[in-house]
Figure 1 (cartoon, rainbow, N blue to C red):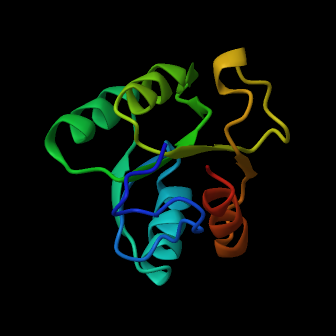
Figure 2: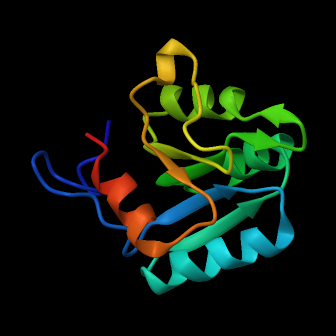
Length: 128
């Protein structure tokens, strides 16, 4: 699922140097997420709505993504499908504990909110 320039087979994905789509509808939480991604060496492209996320996918060279599961009352699975179609690795985030994803996303890592850098790095590293 990862491009060769993101991580060669058998290597762990790191965030350093990646442009990451961050779909998060809570502004303060989005700013914290942006700071964490920048500390990890990534460039964050923030989206507060599903439409903004789709626009960023169309206009930016996104290399990975983190998707809040519930965005303004809507599930982020349509964006996840676009990411999967484009072979862009992604993880989910949820403030509700273990989210029950559709079967097609059952193996996508989910990190709990509030965000912390160790959990983000662990979730991205678990992508294969």
